[in-house]
Image 1: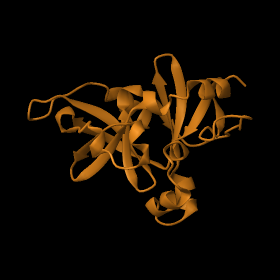
Image 2: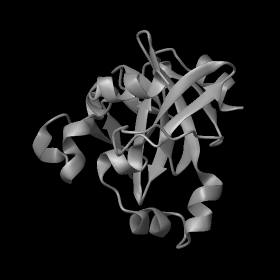
Image 3: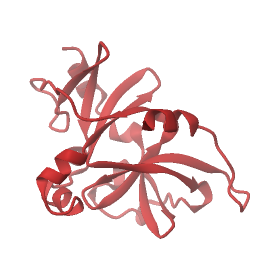
Image 4: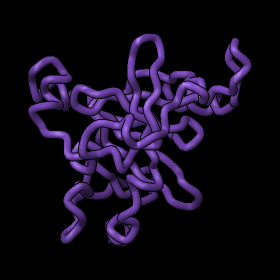
Length: 179
């Protein structure tokens, strides 16, 4: 369903102000709204048969088999230090709500493919690049090192994740995929 949306939305339309905008897949982690560039998203799936890998990083719950390819999965909640209590609060107060809405966003960065486990996928949003605040003092919280900026759209704040930084523990992910 969203796979087609992501593929169709890879262009860079301009906003009414003439500034370029970029499309992002927005999702929920805990009580926050986050997004990643749609051009890096291959597809979005429901969590399925995650095989745990011994000695993997604490934020790598394991790997999945996606049409014959072994894909490492990163729990963004664990990677960014978001507690289960915050996730339940964002999902209406129950862990069951979190589990039923959880998704894995399959992303590609160059030749690297991995899955990002999130609490809920929301929509594709156009964000005017001129509205993105990239100064680190604008990014509250312990996970500011993983963001590429903060944007506001229709009264909602989005933390734009820098996937290069989020996945900087490359050897942990590569080791997980080589099971």
